[in-house]
Image (cartoon, rainbow, N blue to C red; front, side, top):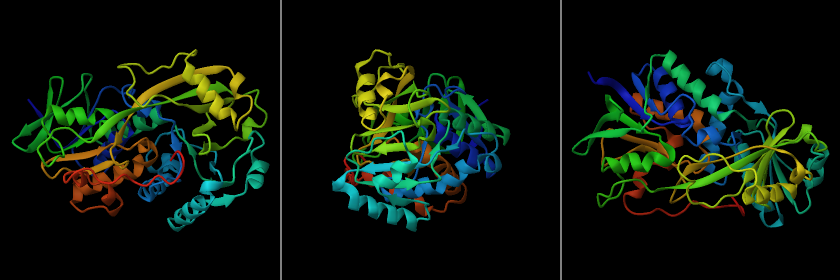
Length: 396
């Protein structure tokens, strides 16, 4: 007997879990199709877990700002523990972007974000572990930090289940059900779930899910989505021997194109630069002797002396879904009634997931459009590729 639901959500990660939770909390009958409870196949599990507001795109900044309170008050608002730790966050730029940074701070302040500019000297007083040579300006967010990505997604999925959602195993992935142009549900293994709305929130796998059903955004009837998979990676090292590391905040260094943050007591997580092509199928670990780890250490060492000799604890890679214009796809697909997308977050899905889940659930249950999602509508691609969003900094 096929199952029925108001909404089917296809997705392994935090965005899909957030949508499912908020739908269930609103009283909708929802089915979440995910590969497994550990979210092993999604980018979420290997996200750097950053919770920060500073973005090149002001629309992304707004979603992140709308999500911050949820991370800060997770036990009260969601229940359980997402692993949020407030460390503070600093964005470092060189001379050529100092004025742009000041404008970004002003924009964020107008959004209600607690942020302010610092000189390198002022910032150095609170961060003795850092070498700030070549840094001209700093934007600091005292409320920002990081959370545990896999735990965040698992808690959301668990809360959705507790509120009545069906969590359906989709170990081999999921397929859309289609009748003409209408999307009528989804299939996972032997389970068919019929629904009035299907949300595809499958990250780098979203285009394949749509293409397999002959569904897409192109005005010429083309299948699939304007997405491409891009590798990201990080490593974790022992920071016990780094002077001042216990006071380290989360950092994005635009001058070097790297980031790093604490990862619990005595550990530091830092970016590993990888070729943008997709990671080998099923491969999530980076070998300890990989050349890329040495490159990542060297980038972090411009600011964090001693990281090149710090013992390596772990290193991982995954694929994230990037759009052709740098902005996510969130909203209904006009050519295919019943199909709703929430994918292509260009590496920023984790920090915005609470606000995205809340807004998507509201749209699907009330039919009213949420203004914070207006810039992300998928049908902007129907008339051809839109212009890329502005990159304000060297690496962002």
